[in-house]
Image (cartoon, rainbow, N blue to C red; front, side, top):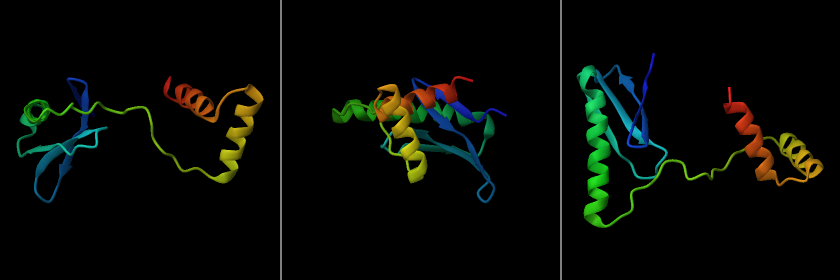
Length: 111
């Protein structure tokens, strides 16, 4: 089942709301809130495209730079024990903690 769509560099995950019997989504990875919905499953991709296009047009009209997905910074919460292990591995390898985490994540998602 594919419920993630991409358009013009933006992504969304489509979800079904069983109470209202609509499918909906929102642009992921940006701070601006841009959502859309449809009661017709076959038109949800069209609604997503329209939401992205409307967002880009709105930004243009108000002179705002549209946000890009995932700027490359985020905060994570991990146990102190794991934090210490990462810091020690970084120290042993002569890397920063950020570089060590980036390498670990790259390895994890390269599958």
